[in-house]
Amino acid sequence: MKKCKSCKQEKEFADFHSDHRNRDGYRGVCKDCNLKKAQIWRDKNREKVREFGRSEEHKSYLREYRKNHKKERADEAKGYRQKHGDKVRASRRDYYEKNKEQLKAYRANYIKQNPWFNRAASARHRAMMLERTPVWVDYEALKFVYKNCPEDKVVDHIVSLRGKTVSGLHVPWNLQYLTFEENSKKSNKLILKNEAD
Ligand SMILES: [Zn+2]
Image: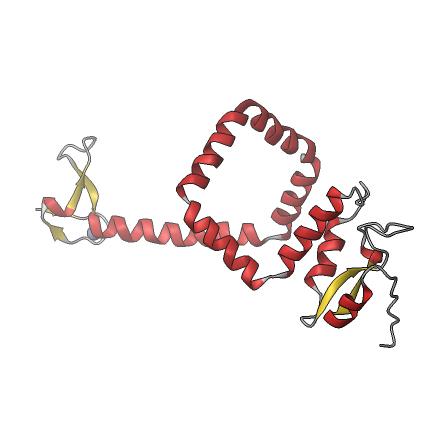
């Protein structure tokens, strides 16, 4: 039996962690007390760590760090990609192969939930083929138009990408929403919808 230095209780040796630095080979504090102490220490410090993480000081430090190290961070990532390009590609391919079915299902589900995505992609592809996409086009703005198309309408190019006399560009301000009827009537004629209808 051994008396714990902390709780002063007489306990079996098995209730103490071994410690070869002590003459009897066991710690002065019993396992229960040791656990309690560790728990208290962790709780105290967890709060400290949490507080520090939430502090403006820490947040602004992180912001500053990211801002000041933008280039290094980008270079680092780029360097890594260059150095490990084959590895990265291989691991991506590997990931794709392993998760093919899941990824396909995920994509199919995404398109089902967001049908505009396919329409935006095929319009983009068509404009590319017809060379009607200026290099400076804002793809996010284009996507926005397709994403926000009302359900009963279609996205139309005001000036057709393949007009008889003039050809329009695949740019946000050459897009408008038409009903299916308006769109089928339009064919290659120029219809300008005004805001009133
Ligand atoms: Zn104890």
